[in-house]
Image (cartoon, rainbow, N blue to C red; front, side, top):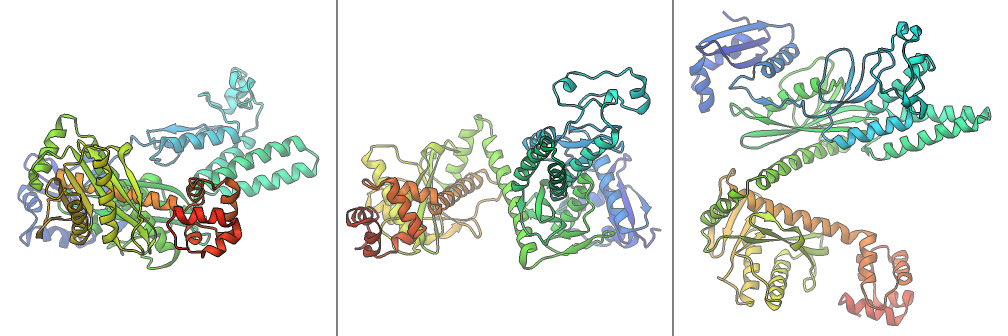
Length: 588
């Protein structure tokens, strides 16, 4: 008889192998639920059928059950449990548990009392930090056992690092352990994100040196300060009111989930990490996030007492307060975390498409041809997307795929010229017309498939453009609506729904996402001062001094375009104002 207490349970098959590990607030209720109802999920039904033996272990608290379950899943990797990825491949920075500790990169976490910081998803970040420490502090790199007995014995000798000034020679007693410990404390603070503490300490130290006329030492500290402040400026500052917070978000798809983690200390994001979890029994997003939180906090040794999450978990953790923000800076942090999770998923999907062997290219194109009922193999695909912010700087993007992969050198962006205001339909017609009018004029090859980012409205306008060019029926064209990923065909009111895991849909989504990214990037450039400057400099007869004058007076290209002719002419003269108004086709 199982007890009505928290604990973990293990299911075994008839060979004695563990096939599932679970945790429960009440072992009695949880385990009995497996055998008291019919399971709609096929894998759960198969699990129950395979159970030949059950073992359990009672623990003190629900948190103990969570941790034990997590560790057992990693150890035995049961067939019916979710796959928690082991991140041995990711690098860590370790402060070794030894006299005069070494600080270095490692991929193996050894529980020997040393302090580990990470895991870092970017090796470049680790190298940057270690390079920072080398510039700031003179740390030893040798593997000597620098115990007091060994140092006092006189058997250890300084090496080349001492002679070239990279080490202060603790092996021969030239550096006190107390002084070395101060370096390590500062490094530990930097790795924890408490850079401000180190900066304040160094400023006070520099001031003391200067007051005592130790200008050489003061200058050395000043150089350290400069390096640290540059590093601090690269941190993403979110809010000075948010002190020590862990942020978790989750993006769930059919067979997996992607969980993003952000570490925020003193108002700045000091660490970010995303992991993938493979589903096993169609687990809920609550269960998946629960597993991830326990796994990640164990992995990174986090002891933050406040956790920001997208929904209230069904479990409790000791000394941890879960918050679901609905507004303000904390909600923005949660939204940022979710964007990171989604971006990680999209990148992974794109890599999977690009990583397909070349032998598969024809098969993928054949699949697209079959799924979309095309007349030709879609070797050349083009996708269009509009981008505008409340009608300002309306632009569009066209991305080109050859053999199912991006041909980035052939991407094109467009200024919308004939449409006033935020009219996506009319903009789409103009851009599609201009793109293929030019290809025809230049006698270049046309695509076998055109993808329009939008539903029936945008697709209809693109068709009008093709009809004007006598291309309707000669090039296959579809529209993809974002909400339900519906595929629309000309003259058919019923959309096509492709399987979410189909290669055809993945290539179409990839092209659509690329067009959106390329368009948004161009739109941002358009609104930047550098781009405005280069845009104005392209106008014949408009020099650098005129551009500077216009920027100083009107601040942005959009603002300049909205000015009456007399205002612009007053600033730069009639002849130059005429050139600008003619170039942008503005009314005088």
